[in-house]
Amino acid sequence: MNKKELKQYQKKLINLKKEILDDLSFSSDDENNTGNFSISHHSTHLTDIADETLQRQNHISLNKHLVKTLKEIDFSLLKIEKGRYGICENCHNKIPKKRLNAEPYARFCIDCRQISEKL
Image 1: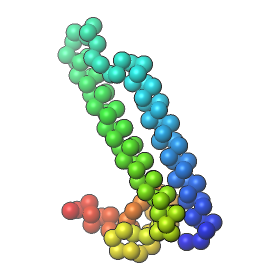
Image 2: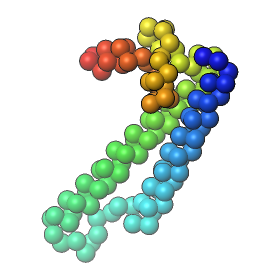
Image 3: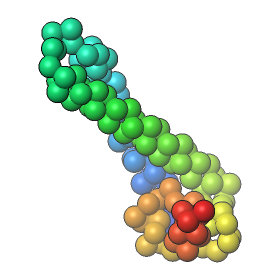
Image 4: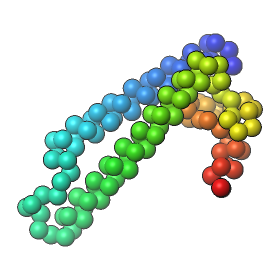
């Protein structure tokens, strides 16, 4: 991969990181504005309580996914600095550009990813 392509992936990763940080910030603001998703004392129906609980669980799950993705992005940015970006961590072959375009923080080629998911 040439320097121009690396710069493009680096820019893509940085932009994706900014988007996620904005989403997490917005999510945090939303959580603060709704009382930390706490179940309202005014809710007397079990369906209301169940709905609020489900919303809170979905919010937590989404945030965990976003934080994990942020870590992958940071790791990919570090790999760019170290000259190891775009190399599968398992088989050490180049990760196809098509895969990196779809998931610029990919750590494995498609074959190795499928193998790891089966384990």
